[in-house]
Amino acid sequence: MADAIAAAVSGARLGVLITGPEGSGRRRLLEDALRLARVAAAARGEVLAREDGPPAPRDRPTVFVMFDAPTDRLTAALAALERSRRFGVDAPMALLATCARAPTDGAVETFSREALVDGALASLLSDLHRAPVAAAVVERWRAATGAWSGRVVRAVRSIGPAGIPTAT
Image 1: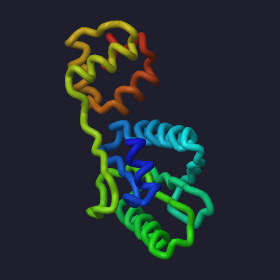
Image 2 (image 1 turned 120 degrees about the vertical axis):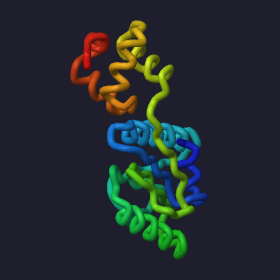
Image 3 (image 1 turned 45 degrees about the vertical axis):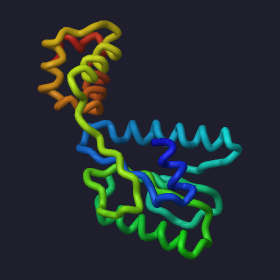
C-alpha cells in the first residue's frame, strides 16, 4: 500500500482509499501505510508532507488524509486534486482516505478490508496474549467481534491482554 501512495503522489492515481466497515482496522492500516510511504520518500531524499482534511494548494508534495469520509466529500476532494493536476500550479498531491464505500472513480486505488479468517484471528489473539489461545476462545472472539481486526484490538485494549481467554 505504501507503493500505491507513492504512485498516487507521483501522478499515477489521484489517491488511495481503504474501504470496510467500522472496526475493520482501516485507520490503523492507513497510518501504517502512510508512515512507510513517508520513510520511503525520506530514503529517496524527498519530503512527503501530511495534511488532515480535504486537498488545498501546497508548495511541497503532500498527502491529504481523510478518515471516514462520506462519498460526496471524497468525490469533491478527488475533483480538487484532478483540477490541481490539470492546471499544474501546485506541488504533487494525493488523497489517502478511509471510507465505508469508495466512489466509482477509476482514478483511485482501493484496498478493501476483510474479516480475519480463523487462522489469522487465532494468530492475532495469540500475539496479543503472548501465548496460544484455544479454538473455543477464537470462536467466542469471532462471535463477539465479527473477526474484524480493529474491533479485536480495541476490545483487547479495554480488557488487557491477560483477559483474552476469559473475555466475551
